[in-house]
Image (cartoon, rainbow, N blue to C red; front, side, top):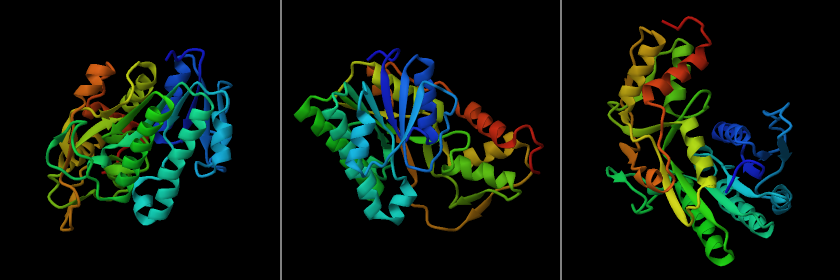
Length: 307
């Protein structure tokens, strides 16, 4: 689908990844409607090409209004991992019922394409490098809700002819994420506290920069690929210890990490994004050290690093 001149809905568009998606759409000449919960504010104030509407995914009428006059839907609104674990019932309402509601509203409004933001959590814990054919074996309510979302979007494609793509994001990081390893380490360094590492730090992940994730998300709307799920990662596997030491070096900090003898729930989550390269013509472009440097620059704003 062409971006320029079309109108797109981004649920959760005021969130960490969503803001990058909205900015990319605007640079491409699209107009955007952002659906966010009431009281979240308007991070796009002053841009006449972005309309922010207050609404909840759990309210079908809110979803219906948000989808009116829309050409394509990016469904990024979500109850995140930790809040989902703390409140499984709310996870069901937002991530499962809410996904159904926005799918139903999109289909009824004649939306021409639907991009679902899923997560690598659908795979569960595995030592293997996961491609998209890997079993979906999550044992967490958040991963289960993402599996359900993918099942619903597939069903809407089959029953109602709604073209769709699902994107399974790997370990996303970037400035001011508000979650995750990189965010936690940088905040501790900035406050003068030594970073903490659970276990020996050998746990490894596929770290992918937020703007690369946004580019994959927008690309999924542009292409003709449909009825497909794609991993979105950098292909750069790094351990928790590697990332922590790199951030200490980039900040010029003389601190050393504290290793904590606590259980580690996951030892490896790394995915292959070869399919996205082949069918979406997308590949990550920001190396980890460059992405970490951007996070540090944003956090410290040229202030002297904490020693």
